[in-house]
Image 1: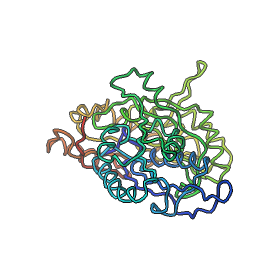
Image 2: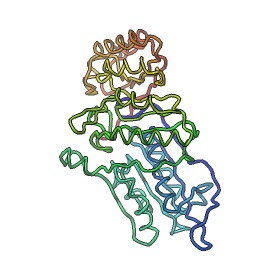
Image 3: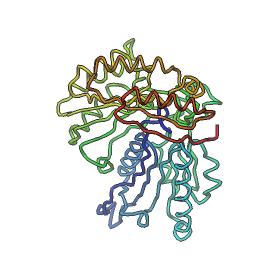
Length: 383
């Protein structure tokens, strides 16, 4: 169940590329080796790349497999129960390894770590680190402390329910250091984060609670990162944000919108094409549609989740729009970009859904003509 809460409606389970450890640190000492497994959205995939990059700057190398690692990390997702079950199963399997090798570092990172910090320690007390997505830049120093005998650590952000927005934002640290090309499935494509967090609070989504308030990155920083990626041989960039088209960055009285950011990326020599996901229907504004229409390197691909075809269900989801408004947005896109590929997400079986409400979703799918859709059975979640 993705939509506005996550980047795309795809479950991703990625392990780092297999690479033998060949470098050494210091005099005759083999480098420390890490293994990381990632479950969840594209934001998690990027987070894992950044964690590995930070650890490699501290002398770590990637292990050929988990059995050869000095530290094992699990980057987690909390959108559906199945994603959490996979992590607890993995933690159960690593328990016997930890018993044989007490010096093995075990870390749980990301959204599940933020949401269930104490529960993770209760169910897997042999774990050493529980680190939320807003504290990932601390992983190198935290794991160093654990391996030096400092004991288990929990580092998470403030609970949004018990803190002001500003305090919650300050507790979520900006984390976009140097990249790690070896972590990408292909050297020619890369993700670039436009913002962190979310302020939409859809009732089916945990993201605003685990990733904090929406905070836009500086356009100068984003463009500089894209320029570096192009220099490394990257030809396609995907801009990612929880609701990427909500991007607004204000500095010195000037506000940069996503359409302005696209225009700046268009001027990057060597960048073949770029796209952006996931979009929120009410923020699909005419200036953004015009940018996709007029800028040659922008892929005419717009992922704008509807989630449901019933106004009553959308109200229970707190999506903030009606199907009439969604169809008006879709008509604007089709008029300006008749060749564009439009895609959507849908949740089936959301709380209280009736057969008639389900049929309204079928009607929307039949009439909208989506290129494809990501469809998920609703997973009841605490809260």
